[in-house]
Image 1 (tube, rainbow, N blue to C red):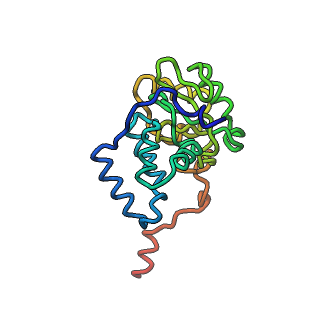
Image 2 (tube, rainbow, N blue to C red):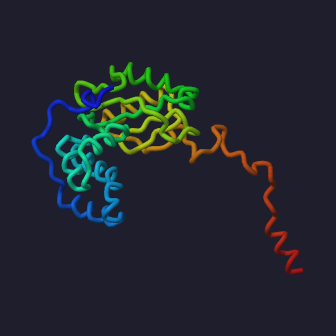
Image 3 (spheres, rainbow, N blue to C red):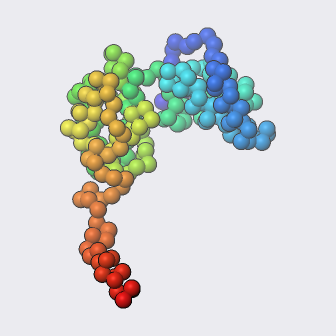
Length: 214
């Protein structure tokens, strides 16, 4: 896909960081030597996206390029390479669905099918009401709790068709559930529950204390 296809046709005429974000930019730039300030391109893109309703207009690309003494195309290359950045408006709930091998083996196709059935959208599309956008992405880095959907900043793990349907219903009602494993797993423990040290018998602490004081 060309860069032009990723960029929104309708663009604001200008972009300016808020006063709060100007303070944050100073804090970010202080981390880098002046000759290496281009290293701040990703944090500044993230700030611009969060300020601008979860997408980055070209005016923000130009502003960041000017701040970091970079060519505009270099900033645009970064923004178009990472799926975490959006160059077009997205829905209130931006669903990023992992479809790589671990998630696929654990049933990500069922999650995709549920989203298609319930919302009528495929990867790269947004619902007519602007509530949901979907994008299939590469590995989200939580393979042990696959399959996974990232909703805005939150991970929902161990999904299947039915739990995905419940998640979408909760989001549509404006009541996002707590992120994490929808199956109730703690961290990355076995799906069958804790197994480590399960066969060990607890020590009889009281008896041991009496023996020491005898």
